[in-house]
Structure formats: structure tokens, C-alpha cells
Image (cartoon, rainbow, N blue to C red; front, side):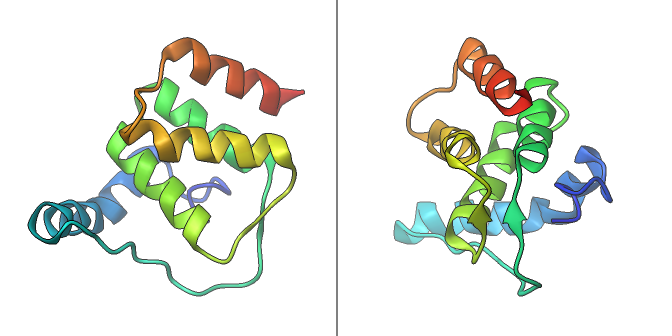
Length: 116
């Protein structure tokens, strides 16, 4: 949430979670399943501004797809609520990007939908 709320830059967030992401990917290669690390916190709804921050960092190449995908997975499997369906769709778009390549126009459309 620190990244989504703007308390960490995308680069700081990348640095903070890079080892978790590496460990998750290694476990996936070795065993077919990885673990995401979700720290407990206060009940939080993921807003359009939060989702837009994630997607804009990805679109601006300030976050790698690997890190953004991991963050989306943590949001989905964590105890977070989505503010609305547009947020839900945007987060799932990033989460599914490791299986279905994310096109830049899809990303831009999702960002535009989060802005309205």
C-alpha cells in the first residue's frame, strides 16, 4: 500500500519487493507454485488512484511487468476490496499479463478508464 498511496516511488517499491519476487519465481520453477508475501494491515480498498498509479508505473517503465504482476497478485489474494469494477478489471489485467501478453493500447485504455 505504501507504493499505491505514493509513500514509495516505483523504484523504491521495486527494490523493496525484488527479493520476494525472485523467491516466488524460483519456487514456481522448482515446484510449480510460488508464494506471495502479504503483510497484514488495516482494511483498505484499492481505489482508482491506486490502480492508476500501478498501471502508470508499468506503462512508464518505472516498474517491470514482473514486479507489477506480483503486486497485482498480492492485491488479488490479499484481503483487499476493490472500489469498483473498473479497479477490479485493471488489477486483473496486470495479474493476467504473465499468461496473456499485455498490449500497450490495453494498458492505456485501462488507465483512461481509471481516470474518468
